[in-house]
Amino acid sequence: MKNRFNYIWLSFALIITIVGVVLQFGNLKIRVAVPRPDLLPVGLILCGVILLVPVLQLLFVRKTKQQVIQEQDERNQKIAALSGSFANSTLTISLVVTIFMLIFLGYMTIVPTFTIFGILIINRLAWYLYKHHLEQTI
Image (tube, rainbow, N blue to C red; front, side, top):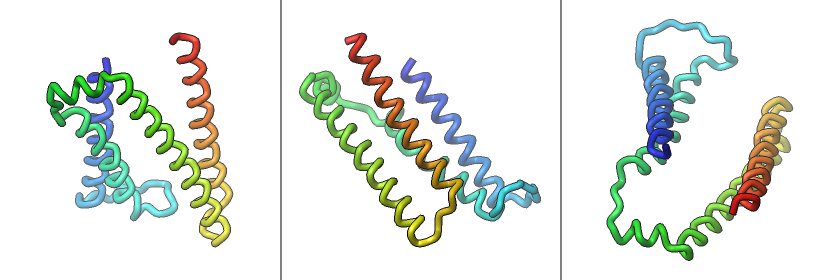
């Protein structure tokens, strides 16, 4: 199941990247209703590559027997969970500070501001619901 999800993720990332490359380097004249159509291919390529890096690491980096044993160790699992939690908190704080700075400097309008804050709220809600689910099942 986990491997199947990784292949779906890989396919999605490759499609995004290929569409971006075709739009950037192909001689296609496609009209898209976005404010900056010249940045659309670059954005697609960037998003595709950002999605590709972790899934390629998950799929194609082979682990030694010792690494698999260490991964299954409870202490290492707790360390990984704590580091992931810290990274999530750091990302949330960094995004909030960045949004504040962009608003303060006049680069951010109201729509992207509330969109990003909405995503942050969804992130926190997902964290709470999954934590509650784990508390009920474990």
